[in-house]
Length: 177
Image (cartoon, rainbow, N blue to C red):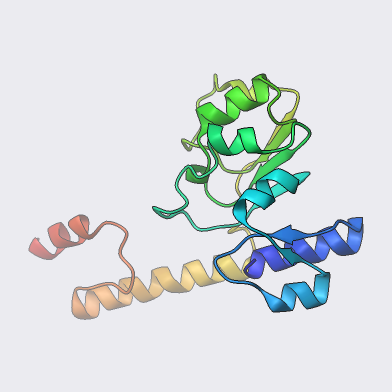
């Protein structure tokens, strides 16, 4: 129930009058106060959710946390939504859960793996909606990305290092030239 979860809670409660439950590493008293959100255990979240929307980082703790075991704990009428990171769900298990009607449907703007293969069964399932991940498509995010790229270029030419470096092995090759 971080920044994105708060916006989701606001929309779900405000526009659709949904009862909002959530699980997080820490309770979010602001969400509870503003949106009537109720903190529950992860197991209760799985058991009670009609729509389970994931908004988390991808880490060792969250990698494929949504798998066969977890889908089996959800309602048969549940909709699984992942707009976080594809690696948060196990795609084979998700496909199996949808085929077996363990859960009702899925909404994805991230897949596992990414990019998804053109013959991925999810693409032809009537109970699945897949959209391109556009989380970085805001003006603020794009301006921030452009600023960071410019700062990295300046830092590299001034000090042969970068503020953020995705491929440090490539940077070391550039330094050697």
